[in-house]
Length: 252
Image 1: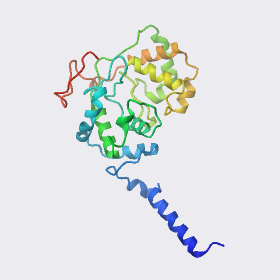
Image 2: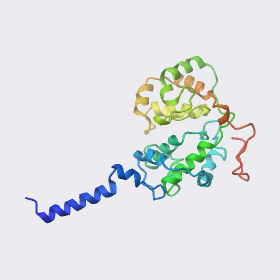
Image 3: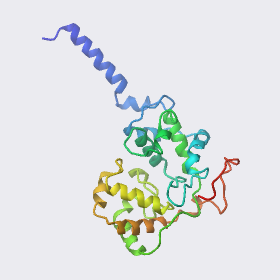
Image 4: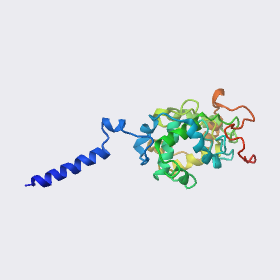
């Protein structure tokens, strides 16, 4: 029989455990966006509930601009993706996944660490700033050789998670893919099909397992030509006024 002293000790340990790690109704109220953030893939929705501060996001984004440029347009050759306009929830999920090792991205990994984004508030702030950036009026597109085939594949397989026009679906954490660079789209899609992107939706992985390289290139060619609505697109020659002195590599 368990002694009363041992029972009381175990009770206190259990009580302490649920006080710290409990996820009941009170846990959501106690989520502190400014406390040191212990990355957890289940906390995406909690981060989304915070009120974003785009001014703080602008300060953080200066680090992101090293690769993605001040405008967030990446490179037309697809080496870096366009992130301007991307849905906040998608950015938050990807940053958390990279930070905890669910998505392999050696280039991004140092920038997703807690040393750069120490709080949940920082994560939603920079995501808000990026979502507000107007998208590039031009992006890298494919050769245009089999667009009908690409459109059929997209309509049959992708609309539920990415939207009719590639605008993304927040509820599904489905990324905005309209206006994205063709070569980047192809690379990511091939990695998902081949099991190299570990944080991909398992249903998507199964769905596209039989896609050929030709299927992928035709589909991504079509997707790369899906245009964002005019209000989301920057005017020709636009430069981000938040970084007027930032040097830009116009060869990119």
